[in-house]
Length: 132
Image 1 (cartoon, rainbow, N blue to C red):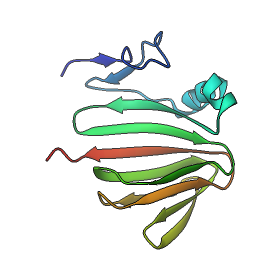
Image 2: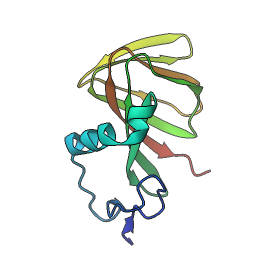
Image 3: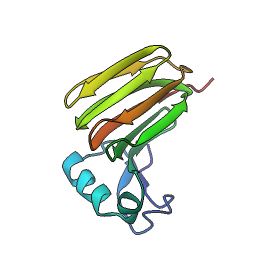
């Protein structure tokens, strides 16, 4: 497997962070600090960093300010959402689930869902890609 660094992310062109290698280490507290220090976080209601990216899986740390929303959308693959900090409301079809720190959900592919931050929140989104 070839190592892939972050050279394709225009928001972080100077980063040497590995996105794909035989072993990718992720310090979530450091990434949260990074997210909070960036202009995107300061100027908008969210920011995110891709931590791992392969042909079959993506892991993204997403930060949302209180009351920020990810509008209804669907993913072409199975996802999991794990709350690292804060409290979010995850809506899928007619089911609303409140998730706090150390809680997570999994969702099958192509189900319309949305996310709202009830407090400033950070969560890991893992997407297992559907390569049909």
